[in-house]
Length: 108
Image 1: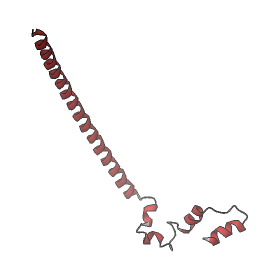
Image 2: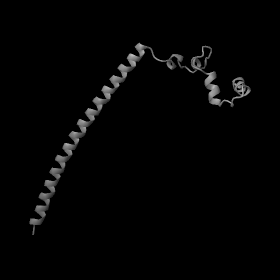
Image 3: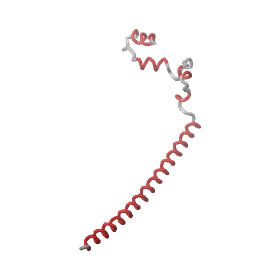
Image 4: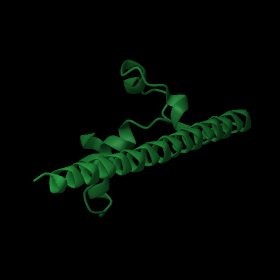
């Protein structure tokens, strides 16, 4: 790493940041890098997906989108039902309060 940093300075360029040096040393395209293997990461995941992989990714995204839309629709329906029940309960409570108020006012 120091060699890469020193080469940049020797060429008259500004010194590379630590992140730039590390990104050059630990490149996913580097065939001799074992960092990703040791970390349990696949270097293939950094490459662009093939046409088949891209199609599968699009299919997965579509399925997730459909599932999210279905969940949203169900939530909206539940909300509407709950709102309707709440309005019915409010009417019942209003009638009870009116009946109670009428009963109190009619007593001597």
